[in-house]
Image (cartoon, one colour):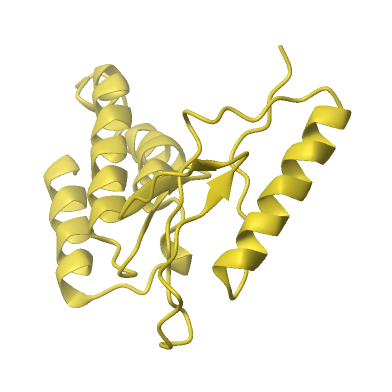
Length: 152
């Protein structure tokens, strides 16, 4: 089955998004892809600080549900621009990787430098993935530091 995954349509007006969505849907169908209407969501983010028209986005006459946060390319995007959900998601991901490698990290027979390499190559990337793009605050820095110190 062919499908399209994680497509972002950005425009300054609701009408522009509606037009782009229909054009994209037609081009996908032409290429043999299908756009799943039940999984399609709309997140409205005001980057310029100017309020938009507040209307609904439609696809084939059906209103696309509006959400306050969505997962896009593995990261959470929030309507208000915060990163609380994404940073807590990354901390959980770091803990999952830590648990998977705990057999190595907690083994007394394995040298400390090997444990350090495993931690730096497996756990830390999962914890910090995408963080270079975050508009991070002191509280999120603290969350990441506390999570990392607890793992160490």
